[in-house]
Image 1 (cartoon, helix red, strand yellow):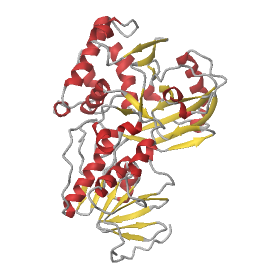
Image 2 (image 1 turned 180 degrees about the horizontal axis):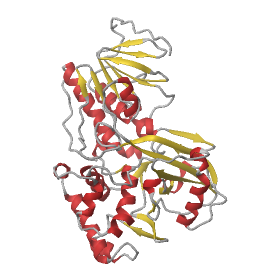
Image 3 (image 1 turned 180 degrees about the vertical axis):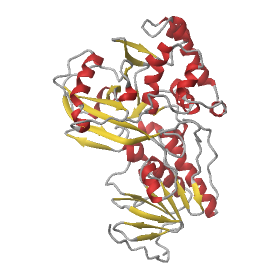
Image 4 (image 1 turned 90 degrees about the vertical axis):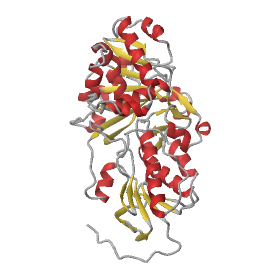
Length: 442
């Protein structure tokens, strides 16, 4: 291990008031809230691009998002932190296409009336079962988030079983849906958090910005003063008055915000609670002809996703043509759960994924081009009960942390945690905050 120079340096006028470590959503949101109040900030990012799990890379004209994150038009923090009109959100098609019992059927459009959903034909239970599902989603949509957080807490699986919903509805729709929203097909997540994300699903539309998920961190970064974000700068140690970097010396400051992923934060902040994680693996395929013309989520309800089966698939180029070159289609497929991937790693499992996609879409996939696979073993922090949706962001005066591991493991949670960390910094620095505490939302 190299010897780092930890010699303390007296803070100079050119040094920033605050150093934020990590240029993901939480770090950029914190930096934006601080600079808006006149605080000088440096954001240090070890990678060569910003965005964290919402970064993207180009490959032969295809845009491959790092993670499988979807936005929801009901996330309040999107409107508070970003110019939503400029993001030009592209909504997915209403409802979802569920493969169950060897058949595909469209279900779960929250914009349909209860009677219309009950009358929709398909194998997911009786009209009464579907009416109960629509009524459940409708009640969640109408319930304030604060009341959902006051409910008795158990696992999502137990809560759904206790609400009188049929097993066919739970297994054929709600379990795969929560796999999409929480990366937790086993439904071990807190029932309160599950209610929050189902509430957002019922009230809003799943979507992505024009230009892909990376447009969100890009817009946050654009709102910062020039030179605020420094890429390729790795922090190796932190204290309340400075940050030691691997190759750029020590940066003195008045406060430090650790806005990395949970595992990296635990390395920089020994003793910080490390949550469990839900792994996510995303396969990218190119095709000359799209298996569907609609940006419609396809859920696999027949496979045990908790044991590593396909969770969902989406034709990204049907959502936004800029995802693929002209005349080509880009399909992103998500596999959940911990897998050995023997003998060839995630790429070695691609032929089986492709064969299953042929069944799910009902079309040949032999001619599809395998572009890439992205495996994230620590993709989504787990949220089993009891889960505190407002974990402390202030560790001590001058030292703070934020990220989706401090709130909910969603885009909304990451943005909220960044704002909360900035408010804590402003309070300790004696700077009045212009922000009001926002309603809790997933």
